Amino acid sequence: MAKSSMATPPAGADQRRPLAGAGSSHLGEKSIKFLLALCAAFSIIVTTGIVVALVVPTVSFFGEITFSEFLFGTVWQPAFANPSFGVLPIVVGTLIVVVTALLVAIPIGLASAVYLSEYASPRVRKTIKPVLEVLEGIPTVAIGLFAFFFMRPIAESLFPFFPWETPFSIGIAGMAVGLLIVPLVASVSEDAMRSVPGGLREGAYALGSSKMRVTLRVVFPAAISGIIAGIVLGTSRAIGETMVVLIAAGAGNPNLTFDWFNSAQTMTAYIGGTATGDIPQGTIVYDTIFAVGTLLFSMTLVMNIIATRLVRRFREVYE
Amino acid sequence: MVIDKGKRPQRSRLAVAGARAATDSIFATSSRSDRIGNVLFRSLLLLGMGVALLGLVAIILWSLVEGAPRLDAELITEGPSSIMPESAGYRTAILGTLWVIGGVVLFIVPVGVGAAIYLEEYADKTRWWNRAIEVNIQNLAAVPSIVFGILGLAFIVRGPLSLGFVAAAGSFTLSLLVLPTVILAAREAIKAVPNSTRLGSLGLGATKWQTIWHHVLPGALPGILTGLILSVSRAIGESAPLLLVGAVTFVTFDPSFLEGQYSVLPVQIYNYAGRPQEEFRVLAAAGVILMLAVLLTMNSFAIWLRNHYENKNAR
Image (tube, rainbow over all chains, first blue to last red):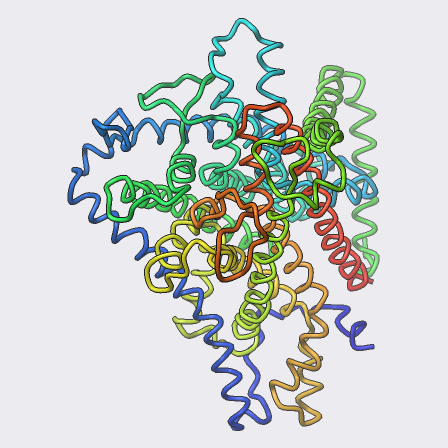
């Protein structure tokens, strides 16, 4: 019967103070608390580890390559006999993937979210939402293969007039990444729209608005920070996506291009493609992995700080 | 007019419905474009939703069609071979995945649940270090997976731990990757256990740990289990960080945990997909079917579990 007693979470659960336990003076109780605290503190060690692992080789990298050569150079070929360390080509590759992914994921994800939250009957929602959640678990390697072996050939046969030259395409990879983040964007923004109080909708209906108007002019603006948070989370996921790009976008082009239809490299694909195998430690190529990793880490960190801020703001308003 | 307070929401809903019907009847005929717009909007939404579902389901269908010819026993019992793709399989990769994931489970269950218990039951949230841990876990959950690969390469394969390119290193790297997700899910589950459960147990003289162990944890179990299953399924499908910690080698013998080369299922699929022969492409698709079968079953079970207990709670 213990389980049925958890039926209703108390309204003030968040304000719960830690309880002063009856036997908290026992040695055993204290050592348990200490062990649990260690488990929690472990996450701090992990973060410190990430920062140290990234920063130390990055510093030694910038001992040899100047900062401006790295950030503003337009040729990326670190492993060549005549190496060049301009990171812009792979940053642009990442940007192409992210923009394409968002162009796919924002309309599709938001349409799904609006439909599920405002239009679908409870029964439809109860079936489709879990299906979307389950599909979120499709491994990225599967999506990468799908993009490379299915989407790319189909795209060429549908649009033969575009300049397809290699079997790889950064744009197709971006579309596949978009498909990958649709469930994420949809579920976060659907949660945001559903937490808009019903009174707002009813008020708008009372003034004679149609359902579309209520959705677009009332629900959407009221949920906007949550929706943006979903998009930002999707963006950060797209920046960090590796396997799809590695499979579908190929080994890339060392020069700065905006060629949507052919092979290009992203930051993640560079790291994943270069660090496979036992590359010798202490070489400049080894250090580039960490320099690119630092750039990637800082970009996603900024995105996530924005997302957390936005989510907090939208929670404050409606809970 | 005096309105009975108990009936107020019902009445206002009726009033809204009435007003809506009235305005509809006034404006509906006159603003035909508005009605067409509504229908159009609704169909656009349906289209978006349809494309989302279709795109995701197409991935499953494609792998089924493409990989069907290789759905045989050799797929599981045979190791990789570069000369005989028609009878090569995933034996060593599956064993490698089992080793790696076994290690992940052994690590994340105690550490993840332990951290969640500390943060929910013991931590004084007015202390800055506890708040720092919370913020830190949230940020860690969103770090790209390949960055964990870099951490694994620098500190687990080389550096302080120096395990080398072995299954244990892959296991440890993936554990760090999914740990934040486990902690966040377990915290939510523990939070949902009503405080009266704790007070009742403490009031009967149980110690704090007895209360947690015998009353809070059993109540939070379904939620914790859901989070664990989803995290483990993510770890099974994750391949990017493992590229950095050595899972790319072509392993022809059964791997072990602490020594020798290893590979895992998704990385082996990636490896096969990169080969030019047609047979390897079929083999890769068959591997995807294998993974989808395992992952989608796990996810469905986890989500069913969560919804089942959520409904129970709502009643």
